[in-house]
Amino acid sequence: MNFYDNALEVHQSAEILYKNEHYRMSVSTSCLAMELYLKSKLYLTEKGEDYAYGHDAINMYRELANRFGFDKWLFEIVKLSRKYFNESRYPHGDTAIYTKAFAQEFLGYVADIKDFIDNECIATVDDLKDKYRK
Image (cartoon, rainbow, N blue to C red; front, side):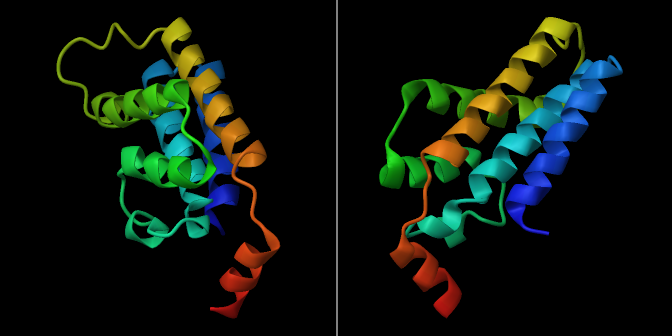
């Protein structure tokens, strides 16, 4: 399974968790989906392989932004996803922040990242030749 297909599955899982009122886990899964969407296009960047098997979503986005254009809003989303990826999985203390509205925001963030991946990070013919020559 490639990163994009994995992202779609994880994204769907975040939606299922949300519908079943597991908001904290929906946030965590949304963050993972964002990371996987970013990983799905790292092969189009110069240093993408450096980040493809880690969890450094901030530098994954920077790599893609260097190639396809920086968007401050998306960068803020990626920073939030990095923060809450750990905090939602390993909460310390009060988990009251993980409300329906908060989880819904993260589902919206996933959609924004997916839109960037689907519509901005477009492979050229040369990219595809390079990918399949390897």
